[in-house]
Image (cartoon, rainbow, N blue to C red; front, side, top):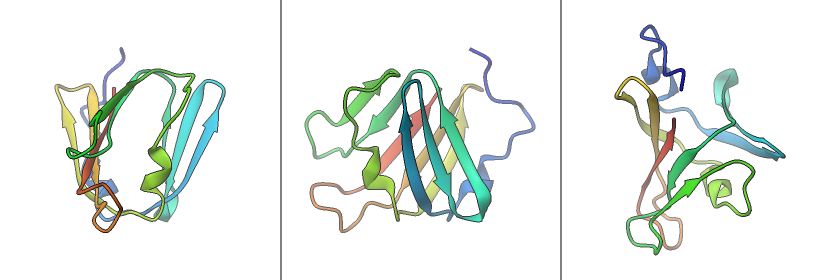
Length: 107
């Protein structure tokens, strides 16, 4: 794992809205307003909701299924880097049936 550069400021993603989630054979692209984007091409975790079972997906590319589409139109409410290698985003999922909130992790 390469990790996240020390100079990376995750707060740039705060209040950004997810505009697009694209699935390709070996990667997932998440586009945000303001020309921000994330490319996932390895293992990642997706916490769907603490109220759902399972409450998270420990996912590997290529994906068989996903609920990442729920992020479209949702704003980032928290952004952080954990252990110098995990970029963590939390989105506001209030009003979405079966979801109270959620954290998205990519390592």
